[in-house]
Image 1 (cartoon, helix red, strand yellow):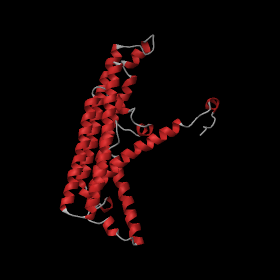
Image 2: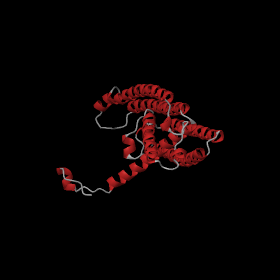
Image 3: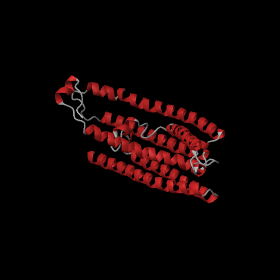
Image 4: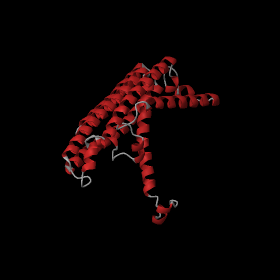
Length: 278
């Protein structure tokens, strides 16, 4: 059983690393097309951007499908992945990010890009027009109609998240219910193998796998609906920002984990509330 679980975990981790590698590849592709589009605004470049955003959404859908397949054999790994950093696991929701965070990213980029463009305008920087541009050339150019659609979608997605959070909360509470709690109480030797408990946990893992697939589908569906609202350039800009944030969080988390491992604590002061030695 241990060997089988290890092999499953290796397959899940391999799937994750392949996904991260593809993210890096897509970043370069998106950046290259955005540069071309901002240099030559024509229908052909818009078409290329639409095709690439379509591929990226397809990547997400394929990855969700692979995770769903692997999760049916061992779903609990996805709720606190060993391949994630501690920072990422502290922020995880249903095996990934909250779909509502996509909207926070849009609002943040919209505000920051507007601020940059106003600053450029006030300083009268040469080339300002070509670096930003109008007609939906960046997220700072979101129209009132686009913002209204995004806000309506945001509210709907938060609603869906709350429903799913209640489901996983119920599953978590089941661990303190019959039969798991009663078997644990009646056992003479703590933690000894028990068929009834194994069956209960198998059922719970199966339910968790279903919730993971549901959460992944919500993430993919949310991205697709956001892209539909945005122009080709805005959609590419948004997806680029999301990928860069995802990869950056992993690297920042890795750095923080390394820093913690290098932070030594005196054995005696550890029990007396002493300060850490850096």
